Image 1 (cartoon, rainbow, N blue to C red):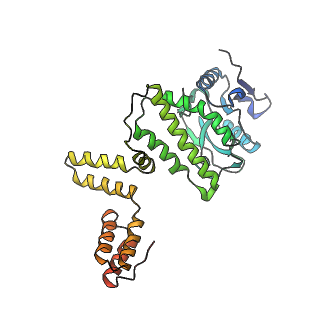
Image 2: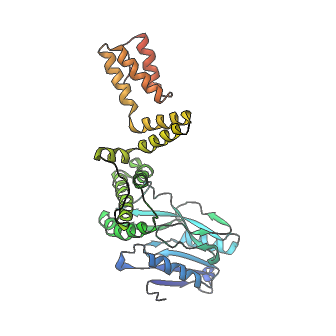
Length: 327
């Protein structure tokens, strides 16, 4: 196998690294984006390792001296087989403190026979034996230069989403929007990374949608069934209400009304801002429409019995109709 993109570094005989082979893949013409070939190269290279330990690095990753000393100590202690290392990610001009990249761990230091490298992009390696996580401390992180800017993110996007589309066996509308929505839900941390977090969360939403729609393209756009209107599509992107509604109907057909009620309450909470109902009740009460205000507050509590503001306002309405508190 031709291995133009692999660099090997073997520790000197007089150093602690004498038993460690470092494998680095560099593919600058592909902006170091992962491809199926690179996974094949990694698997092949690891299989050839004759050292006790392997340290895997991508070309846009590096380590500092404290981490080098730490893994040498682990190799000398000889009581583990796989070490999952903490990663720090530089994206769009900053080391991230959140946005889904700040708590990453990857198994990059291991005995060659304890890890089976995955066959496709962003998959999880199969680990065997004694596995430990190295504590995240200053200097003990693998430094990953992910993207200089959003331009580079987009430049790599096609490589990644092509590979991911190929690994998807199928893709329904629900699977596509759930994957996209989950990216935003787990990454959105502007309190840590400011508007950079918003930008990257939305970029990853697009990433997931593109990977899934490329799967549809590979299938000749023979499916899946999609929402009839743009408003329905946007609602599905914004909440899990449609899936929960289907789950509730299935429970009703199966004779499980209690489970159906739980699912429908969750669907209503997903699709309706209960604070709006509460505030509308305040306005209705201020206009002297007590019956309408009470109906709105009771609807809030029917969906979410723990809604404290609605409970307090209902009590206030019954005592003094104009003394309600809005959100």
